[in-house]
Image (cartoon, rainbow, N blue to C red; front, side):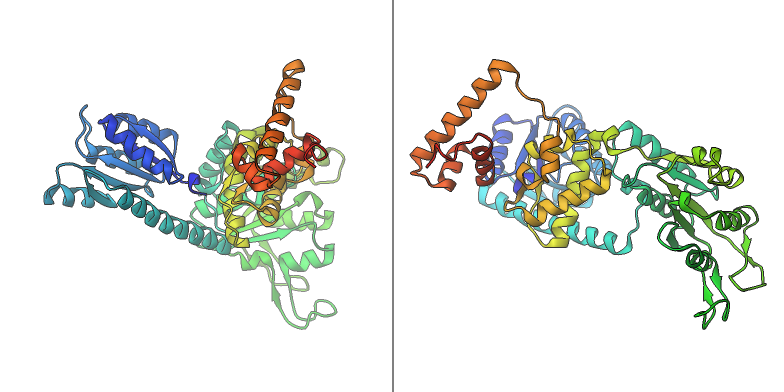
Length: 455
């Protein structure tokens, strides 16, 4: 959907500014306007526009070139088009040298503008898809890549960035599905070990004997089936980071062996006698309260203190619901590329449902819900009916109270019945008359119990 891409038109001439904005809106884009360079920079700080049309000559001490330079400092990927009534070779060269993508002369041709914007957005779509695929393949996330603008997440990410180049052990705690491994990867790939391996091990996925061999490796003949020497995850990660997920599930005997690794940076393979030195950074994660596990004797106190040098607590999604819209758009982009579907935006109504649902499964549940919506949805916009029933039924979307609610409901019923009558029962035409998507009309008919009335 074109409205996914946002455009800012900057021109001190009101007629020119509004005309250009109107042409772009007719093409289906979301367009804002600014009457000066300073206003444009202020708006760019609040929103990341994909394309900027910037007039070259503007009063107020900030011309188009300076405006462009200020915007590019904040949004390096933005496409900026300089427009002017005074075309010269020198100004064109200056504009292109400072980073303008295009340079066009007034009066602007609407068809030329449409083709230009369409071409730029096609390129941006390809770049976005390539970036998503590259990141998905490498699974490399730096701190700046982690989505979270809420104060709680910003505090966590600031601490993660601060410790990324230290050797200190990090303990990441939080409920299941909150994104603890993503934070661990961000710590690794933001630090000076990023060129070395990041190796993840689930302490709950394997039986104790298998996990011991997985972590420490084994010598040939160490046990039945050990037909050759095998390096463990600790050796494989040399110079890099070992991420021990669900550390609270680690058996007591392995806790003792891991304590030696943390304290002395050395270990032996299973069945081996040679002591191997180790240079790895350890990051552990758990959804348990390890201090409570220590008190009840299920987890070694000395190991807990060794792991808990730097503590990061990833909050549940319900505690930073303001991040849900950005996360939803991120997962939508990924799912659309992965599933080869042309879903490019989340409807405001679907967003309201998502931001008021408690998400007991946290970020993982949100990601799964978005992928399901992309696969099953019939529109290029994610609609409420594409979301799981649990979200629609449990979300605390504010209702209009009392008599007013009844009046609003009756008005909706009358509008739908009248549109249906005028369209001779054609569902798509009725939806068009109401200026809503056909899927939204189906949901309204169902929720307002109108099926019999429309027969």
